[in-house]
Structure formats: structure tokens, C-alpha cells
Length: 306
Image (cartoon, rainbow, N blue to C red; front, side, top):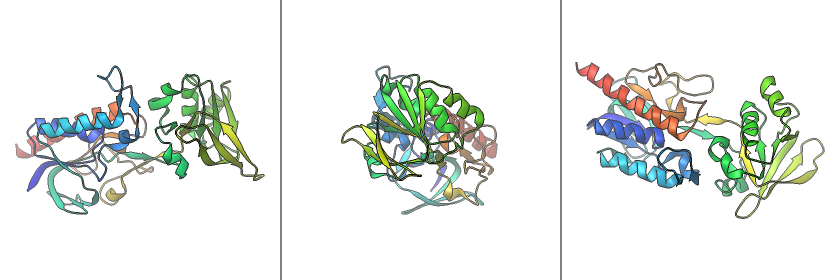
């Protein structure tokens, strides 16, 4: 069987694309991964997705979007893509279990936040540990928080968090920032931001919620505890594009190169969401790009059969 379109990924971008393609009566397969739902599965309260005035839990939102896509006829495969073949048509998608053929492909595999690699950090994700200030900053009104990182993302997150937090401490492992001078200066001039340099985070403290950090001075080796109720890790994101190396054009950071919003370097292969978007990285923008990719797929298929 050859599908009209195969969607790789099951976050807001992939599921929105599936809703649109299946409603257009295109045979649609979603290769969802072993843990469907994308990054929102690790998010507790989502308050900035339209239509939910009281907010909604991330996993519940993804469950609703999945049910909506399947309702219109999309097929969901809880499998992980291991390889792709885009150099001939129909395109081939290979998982650990099956090989699927598609006339078109929408890549919505997303991007993953880089983490510090601490057990305590992972245990408290969604309970005070976050990688998205614009997503979760609101929940830290009147609290002290820490931002880990030294690049533009860390400076931007720190500045944003001062809208809510009483104080923001930026912890950076080096003695100089990687951030651009203008971004660093903006953060340094903010009276609500302080800096702890040459310091490495060893442990996130707290049983059920963040209570502070244990850090080590990289020059002296001395350890100390910083009290805080939140940790925002801002050391970058990594697009999930490794399997597309040699098949599609990627930019210097590994994100998919696109033209006209969704078209990749191979005709018939489209992109949606964070896999090509290193700027916005929001559920609503990913969903919008999913809609756009689906409409582009429908148009492209109709042009091929004309």
C-alpha cells in the first residue's frame, strides 16, 4: 500500500497536518514514534494554546489532537523511523518493524531541548525544571529562579523571566558569555538579574519540586547551594534530523532548510514545526506550520495528477 502522505512525528505540527490531510481524503499515515505526543508530553499546564481558557495539561491536549486526527481517518503507527529513502518515488520510510511507502512526506520530527544530563533534573522536569520560559514563566510569579546557560537563549530567557520572577540568577560554567554583546549587555543592565560565573550545576535539590541547586566553582572547586524555586535550562535545542543526513539539505545547526515555509530540498517532501523552526518553538506555531504543510501536500499532489 502506498499512502498519499506519511507524517513523521506526532506533536502539534504532525497531528495538525494529519487532521488537514485526512479531512482532504488523503490516505494518511502518522509514524508517531514509540512515545507519541512530542515535547508537550513533558509539559504540565498549557495556558497559551487557544481554546482552553482554563488551561490544559500537555498530555491531555496531545491526546485530544491525536483522537481528532484519527477520527478523520489517519492511521497511527507507534513506531520509530530508522531510515528514509527520498531519492526515488514513492518515498520509503523504514521503522524498526515495517517499511512504508508514500507519495509525499511531511517531516514533523521536532527538536529536543539540550539538558544538563542530571538525574535530578530529569526527575523534576515539569515540577520546577523547564526548558521554555515563554511556556512556563507565568507559573513562577513572585518566585526566585535560575537560568542555566551563557548564550543568547539564556540571556533572552533571563530577561523574559524578570516579568514574573522576583529575581533571576544566571549560572554559566565559563568566565565569558557566548551570547552576543548586545544580548549580554541587556541582561547585565537588568537589576533583577545576577550572574554566577565559572560554575557548574551538580544537582537540582528538592523531592517533589525545585528548592535550589548545588553548584561547584570550576576554579576553586568549592561547592555551595543556591536557593530557587525554578530552573530554566537554556543551553540550546537540537533538531531531530540525523536520519535525514544525505537525504535533505540541512542548515549549519542541523535544522531542515525550507523554501516557501514548508518545502524542503526534495520535491514532495515537506516540513512542519520545530524541525525547521529554531526561532519560535511554540505549540501554536508548530500547529500552524502543520496546517500549511498539509495544504502544500494537497496542492502538490493535485499538480502531479493534473
